[in-house]
Image 1 (cartoon, rainbow, N blue to C red):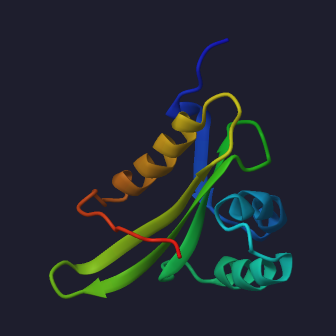
Image 2 (tube, helix red, strand yellow; image 1 turned 135 degrees about the vertical axis):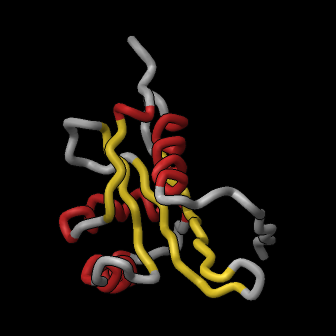
Length: 125
């Protein structure tokens, strides 16, 4: 079987129809997330207008309706850089090729003019 490439992955903004299918993916990175908290948050994000300061991009294999990846993003103001995009919770749940899903999500941000220019260190307590 041929490996999947980034071209086999479609990345687009989350829609209302993606909310429930995305819940298991979100739980993969935040196990204590409840369905009610996810529904409240994701419905607000899905209703946001184009150009909103927060959103979720969804990845799916071309020709398939269920998501296989997602990334949450937000725009902030930064003294040094001006407008700063923070992308977090890169999720790829694809049994055949999760790397192609992650690459497609990252590439979509780069195509929009963003570049990797930093790192965040976190510590779980």
